[in-house]
View 1: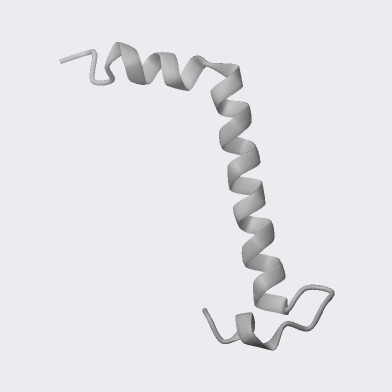
View 2 (view 1 turned 90 degrees about the vertical axis):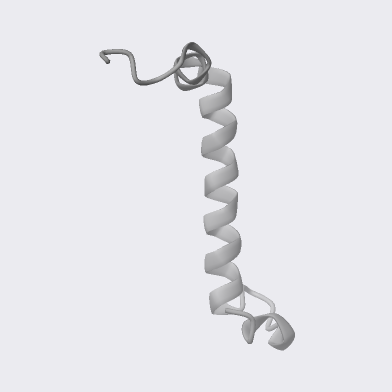
Length: 51
């Protein structure tokens, strides 16, 4: 059982465009979490209670 990852998964991992989109998606998610956790520049008091 040397080949544990399928061809589709290897294609997904080696595709730079997909990697790029995944990186953007993750960074945006982190930005939203950080901004939401700290209230951002605008003090939105309704979104701070949602952890």
